[in-house]
Length: 316
Image 1 (spheres, helix red, strand yellow):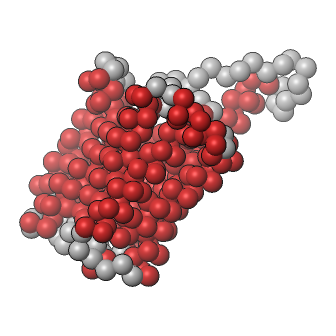
Image 2: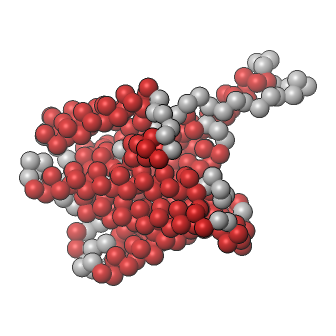
Image 3: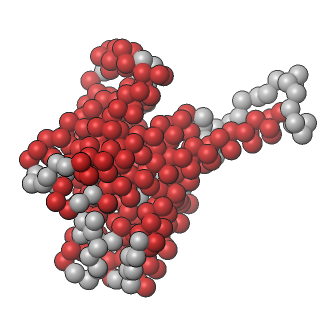
């Protein structure tokens, strides 16, 4: 578990690797999202996780470290959080409440490890804490999207509380989206906290255990939604592009989790987790560069705040 302060080589390395993890996560989400436009997202998520688990196992075998019960326990807990967080996020996005789910999940995922780190005795400098205070709202702003999808009309004959069926449906969807956002954030926050607790001598085995646990969780979800045979059939019958995208996303996910694990051993959890939580910035920037999608004003403000926050953290 990392405890190095900033202003040292270890602290600088933690900042760099935290940003590398964010970039890899952002790129992975972008590529997986593109692939999911052509193949059911559960099938893409399953293939992505298979590749991520395989890559993580290879890295764990190559890297020095001891595979012990503690490494597998913390890793499995992180993977369970990652898998459940992914399921909650996908479920929320599927309802068309992206503008609710995404910012809530990103903010909660950042706040949880910050709270745990401070409660466990981590004390970054005031400048670093100021940077974190700037980064937390930046993460939520970067994750925002446009207005929610239009609500489906409610039949006039359907009885609804308060008299307006359309308003009642909208409220229910917003509440469900908010709940999914919180659940996703808790899952991803658990991922960050659990991995940071693994022993420094365990090498990359915690990340491998986490990816395997996430694979099991997502495989169960895919089996319940589209069936494992259905997922295989969808991937087999799809064009080559989505399959290659899922594979690339899996590699990116493996790189991200390894970078985060190493970063958490060299710096404060409160810093590394917030930097890694900036991953939506990578997705937004890639969408701009590759798809020529314009960032919203809120996202632009979030990116500007993120730059200021990272500068403060680095200066501290």
